[in-house]
Image (cartoon, rainbow, N blue to C red):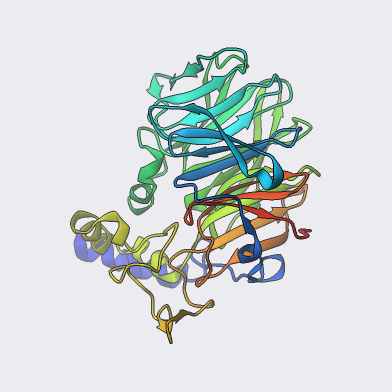
Amino acid sequence: MGMFDHLLRDIRSVVDRDGGQNAIPPLDGALSPNDRLDTATPIGEAVPGVDDVIADGNGVVYVSAGRSIWKLGGDGFATRTKIIEFEDDAGGLALHPDGRLLVCVAGRGLAAIDPAKPVPRWCEAADGSALAGLLSVTAAPDGRIYAVEGSVGRRPSEWRHDLMEKRSNGRLIAFGADLDNPRVLLRGLPYPYGAAVSADGNSLWLTESWAHRLSSFALGGSGLGAREIVAGNMPGYPARLHPDGHGGLLLGLFARRTHLIEFVLKEDDFREEMMATMPPDYWVAPALVGGSDCLEPMQIGGVKALGIQKPWAPPRSYGLLVHLDAEGEATDSLHSRAGGRFHGITAACATGRGIVIAARGAGRLLLFTGDIR
């Protein structure tokens, strides 16, 4: 059987040599490499575990980091106030039209925080299955709530395991305005990471990391419409997306795809032995941050020259924020290349003073005040 499996793999590599999911698209056009992300200004001190950022209409920014939710204000968002601390890691954030703050909490579920009430309201299961791995949440203008779970029964911190096992076990879930009547709308998704409802409430945007895909669905009274694939083969692993305030979206890609990782994903025997015998930080897998440990795997071309990491080298980690127009087309991008400082972009939000960016790999909040088209 083993010889037959290898024969099938070789046949597929010839027949589907340039298949859409195998060929990594180049960074060109609106995604051409630059160093603009490295020009962003760090906001305050480092924020270990920073994950998501959202803004309200009054210039206040909310941040999830570790087990805490912080509110940023003041000059340059330098003032930090802790809103709440959970028993586990806080992740995706959204503001409900009625003013409540929605929070995805690892291992627990979805929380709704009412400013007038100290105790959050929770939804902890959907269709009899615990909501242990929620990644993102969004609210429609009519009050309906949508959330995505990367992988059923698996915590967000185990995302590397999910990719290396080639699982496709994510869910899109709809809730009533009071977190009631949870319904699973889609199953078997390849790690859905980001979800956002359009400003008019007519469509839902969805990213799927392991499929490198951005899709949209029409929203109506009867539920979810047919899938429209907006970008079917992205050069990285898409994370969360938030509105830019002008009908477009800000999309973070938490890592770049590389030929080495794509190759390892095809080699089942090697991958299984790697997972069984090596710590996850040293797997040949995407990373939120890299370059500081001599034991990390590297691809030829990824070495340092005269102590400097070449910016064009195959990246162990990467920083990439993409601006999308109302149709989902990329119009501009901010990069922190292989040798840059701010990698692992998981989210960004638009404010009146610029774009606030969560660089999870670097553990920093950033403020970009330059032009973005």
